[in-house]
Length: 226
Image (tube, rainbow, N blue to C red; front, top):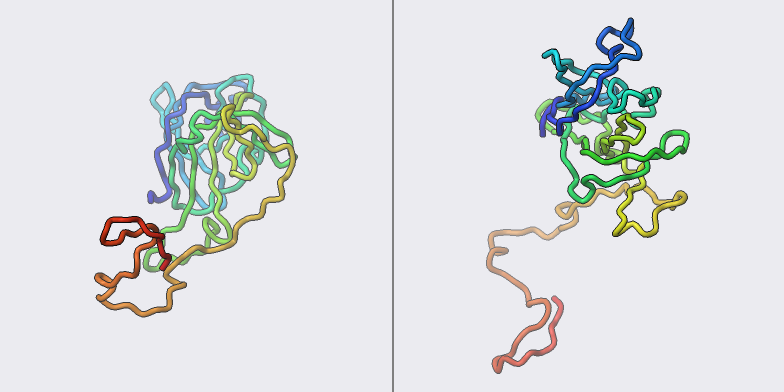
């Protein structure tokens, strides 16, 4: 898993010029750019890197800096991101089943915003000698961030539980209210459940077949569970 920085699918858009001048000027002005990578720092929102047409490369700009329509409304930062980064270990991929799908994103106030899915940011923890796991990427629950191009011209990054997906050939009964789902707090493992000691004999010792078996006359007889 990459540490801190990761390439993302390139996004051609605008950067609001005030983010090029420490918010001292440039308001209402825009520069064409390509967003090409993301930095993940705990307790900050994902920060994106972009290349400008004049050859300047800027690092660590928040999503509020970018839009794909110049008339896009200006929102507070909490409208664009639902969570800060959970760890510096970040993975980026496109969920194939969700690729190019549209969805409604539900903000902190319960208002829905339509957009199109682009890719996903996912966090984890890479345990190494001397690394103490003190972040929240996997405990008490896991969350990822789906990156969207919003219809109003902005970009949002939201978790699963704030998104209602739309697939005209599948989602026939889309949510209209909270279904009452609960976060799964279970840890699924098999090695902490088996108590029998093993030795090399497990390579050659097998139980009965599960399912159908055959007698010597090749006649099918009823299967037997082990």
